[in-house]
Image (cartoon, rainbow, N blue to C red; front, side, top):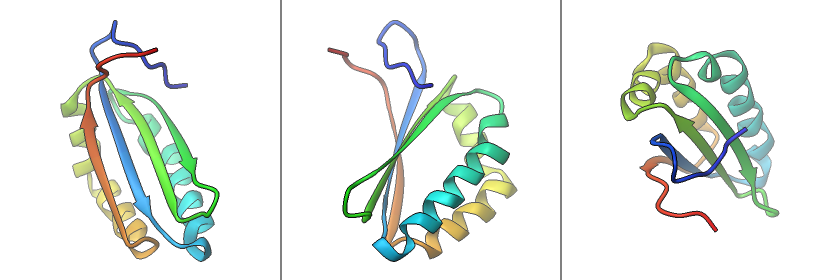
Length: 105
């Protein structure tokens, strides 16, 4: 489970997916599968959460990694490249952005 804190140096990645209500569940299934079968088993993975809006037009993915390099290695793997091509077919766009926790309240 993700824990948001400034006391630990970790890499946070927030990825937003723009999709349609007709493709939302398929995209969520693909993301769940990717985490269960591959992503969560990669070196440096800490935790992740998936969020979907009420209209089922956006999915936000919050993930935590021990380092930027661990996330990038997972993202550049042949397995993840293949999965990302499938995700692209189910959404208009998606963009992973790396962040550092600047504060919690």
